[in-house]
Picture 1 (cartoon, rainbow, N blue to C red):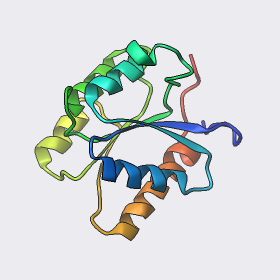
Picture 2 (cartoon, rainbow, N blue to C red):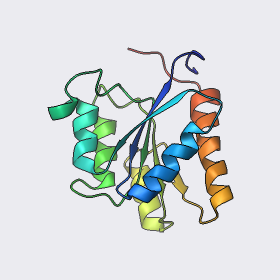
Picture 3 (tube, rainbow, N blue to C red):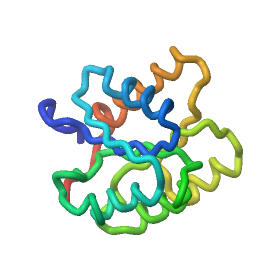
Picture 4 (cartoon, one colour):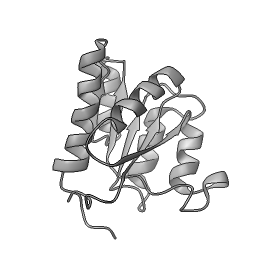
Length: 151
């Protein structure tokens, strides 16, 4: 179920390209929904965030995301390994993971779904289409999608 309108929707963005990350963050926050984006640049930091380890040990510094947006080609821990960890960790497995990448390779798409990604989106090259995609992501996951109850 969608969150209360006053609560921000927390998105964990895992993207190693700083320019792409800035575009994505701006696009996600340029909507009518209250969205907070938490950004990490590699798979190791993503897992530390999600598992609340190291500098992310406190829930205040690492609020549980309502959605993970993940680039596949990230340093330290591969994107597919991040998905597999999320989908096998009981405290995390209900968090939707959407791959947001420039790759439209069949092997990447199949590997993502085989790892139990909830969606796979290819970044459009056209800026207007890209910003519309980001708005659609927020509308779908923050507004329309029914979520399981919190445990």
